[in-house]
Amino acid sequence: MDVLGIGAIDGHREPALRELADRALEKGRSAAARGRVSQQIPALGSVDPSLFGIAVATVDGAVVTAGDSTVPFSLQSLTKLFSLCALLRHEPTAWEQVGWGPSEAGFGSVAELEQHQGRPRNPFVNAGALVVTDRLVHHASDAAESVGRLMQELSGEEVAGDPRVAASEAASDHRNRAIAHVLTEHGRLLNSVDDVLDHYFRQCSLTATTTAVARSALFLADRSSHRGPLDTATIRRVNAVLLTAGMYGAAGDIAYRVGLPAKSGIGGGVLAVMPGVGAICAYSPPLDVTGNSVGGIAAIEEFARLAGWSVF
Ligand code: GLN
Image (cartoon, rainbow, N blue to C red; front, side):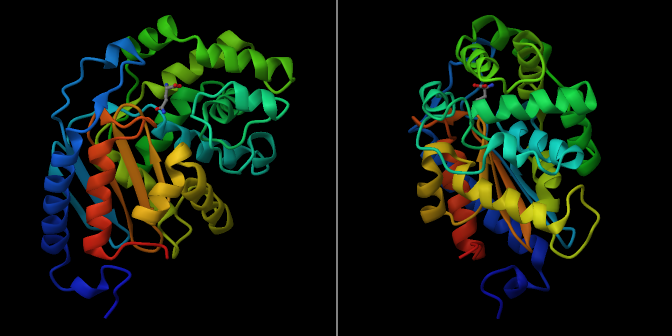
């Protein structure tokens, strides 16, 4: 019996996974009440807190869903994963520019950047993500468009920007602007602060369903083929950095509770990858104090426990 994968439920795989997704949804819904919808971007502040969707995609072709899995949501920092992958296609050595270590500070820390001479800790804190977007502008001219296109190619679903959300973040943000100025002062951006922020806010405003996100991330779980955009060695590194930094200061907690490489966004999305098996995305807008979806994490924790998904 394969306790680490889905082999144990072979034969009735999709119905069994659907049952696990339903149970995870139930668990996640009750946990969501402990969170609060982010007010950081005014246009996202009034999102319905009761929305809850789950999608699971496996490397052998199963896709199962539960709840509001077809509702597109604001991806926000989930896009940082795909912008990193898009950049690594053009520039495999980009790690040197963005770092790969964990960070104890919040995703929007300016102080941490100052402490490290303007060198971001990893591609998933905002400082690192701004450097990624900046370099993607250099290679692909429109960073937001190339991230959306990559996700669209990988998922076969539409991944579109939301100009209202991008404009709302651009009008209310001071923190990313501060980070971009510190990066510029240390000579770490190729483009102007205004250009980088424009591309970054449009990139963060991309919207997609949980199904599209799970499908887009599936190549990170696929050990057997060369169909994906990145080679195996790069995929291993991306997963390693997701495990140590994808959930910001909560990464250790998520490694302990869930045991999977994961990425979150303040829109309420959480994505986790089970190497060799599949990917799961949960969407629930209320967040905890670290900016991660409370219900989304609880649902993925439950699914991983029931399915036996863990890298450990
Ligand atoms: N657009 C948001 C920001 O840059 C994304 C943050 C997040 O999802 N964690 O702050």
